[in-house]
Amino acid sequence: MSGLLALLDDVAAIARLAATQVDDVAAQAAKVGGKVAATVVDDAAKAGAKAAGVVIDDAAVTPKYVTGLPAARELPIVWKIARASFFNKLVILLPLALLLNAFVPWVLTPLLMLGGCYLCFEGAEKVAHSVFHTEDHSAAKDAETLDAAHLEEKRVAGAIKTDFILSAEIMTIALAAIETDDFLASAVVLALVAVGITALVYGAVAVLVKADDVGLALSTGGRTAAGRALGRRIVAAMPGILTAISVVGTAAMLWVGGSIVLHGLDDLGFHGPYGAIHAIAVGVAEGVGGSGFAEWLTTALLDGLFGLALGFLLIPVVMRGIVPVFQRVTGGGVGGGR
Image (cartoon, rainbow, N blue to C red; front, side, top):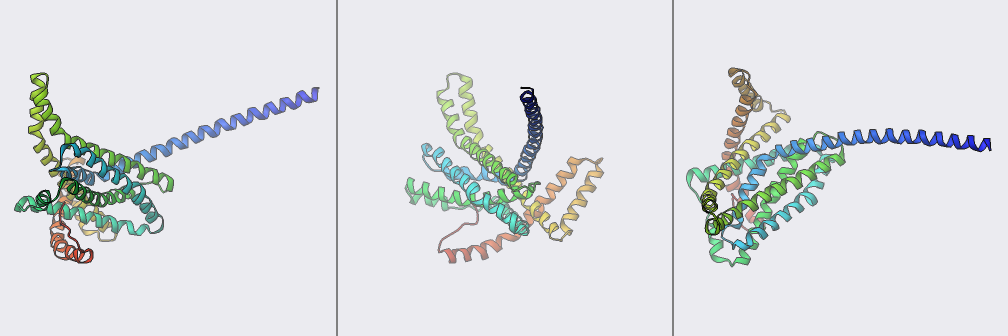
């Protein structure tokens, strides 16, 4: 009996030791998991911030795809585009970005620069349209010649193509901003960025396209004078709000696009442009007492001006070279702007 009790005592001691080890392992796992989670969240936040220019552009561009269509179809159209955007980012672009990063990481910088050039071209083209008052009459022509169903189908198809390009830029920018080398963590960060940005963009678009309807309903059916006045203000303010978003989106495109190209050139060994802008920004900051904000603002302004100049150089290259070649190859038409 004493031998059995001794054996049971040993078993109990081993069980206590095992429990202690499990507690230690669990504590360490929680600590490591917390660090990983913090890293993932931090990388996702940084990646989302880096892609801000593309996000603003996406939100500014998308509402035009529901212009001229029945109000009842606006939200279904936004959902169609959003659903395709989720698919583009999560099913196509996320695995592709991770594979490129794993096997040919050197290609990411040229891809980023290509996306930056696209942003500069788009921003410069919008500035040119605004300055020279040139208009694209294709949308009005489509509205006159196509019935609502075919017009909706064409608009959605065009929006999805545009979204794919912007999504590719967002995912590439996000991948470049990730600091961890862990494959799974990188995948989680990209997924968080994809879901978060898509929900943000198309949630904002849904609010924008229905805001005038909400304002109109309030202005005519509000129970109080204050409510009706608010509705009238919303209706009156929406054109200005959409214009402001478009201006901010254009500025953000030029700033982000120029910054991407400058950083890419610096990474590839062409240090002159990036170094010159950095030196000017530091000089301005020192001139106003070492203000970090002044340095950032100067850098952003010069990056944007560089992006605008590059975009103007790219407009004839795209419109007279790339677009005609693309039309001959595909047998279809493609516009320079969106």
